[in-house]
Length: 153
Image 1 (cartoon, rainbow, N blue to C red):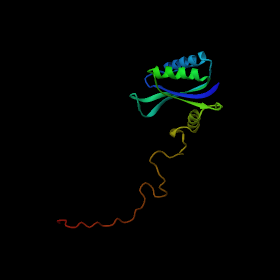
Image 2: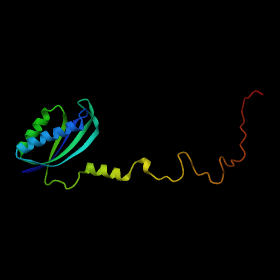
Image 3: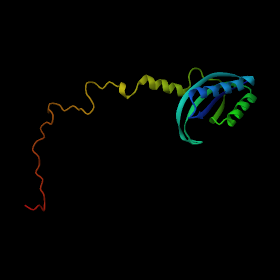
Image 4: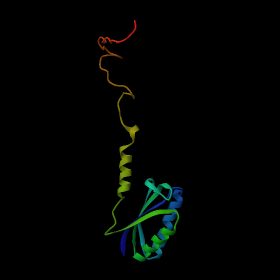
């Protein structure tokens, strides 16, 4: 049997539970056709680069498939008929990747780094800067005299 990676985009107005039901439905189609499903990764709700069928966001889901081409064709046919699926892409691979996909690795790296509020900035607060020994304003020296031409005195 052939190995495939399959990604599909589901509409933004679905709930996560409805997306999971879609995955289960497509898993059933593949297993009825004599195939099996490896890992399934929900990448979550992401913004689209351009609108697809009036949607600005979509739920992304990755599935690793091991199935005959007939089962894959039937699953893709069902996805094409479903109004909940915006787009899908299937790629034939030589072997499935071990561990999590690159999309999930990025998410884990971001969570390890922390957000902006996690940075240690020391005792200063926002807007403070080091003024040295000058105090609040410091010595600026004599101010130059401005000449105003054409003033009526």
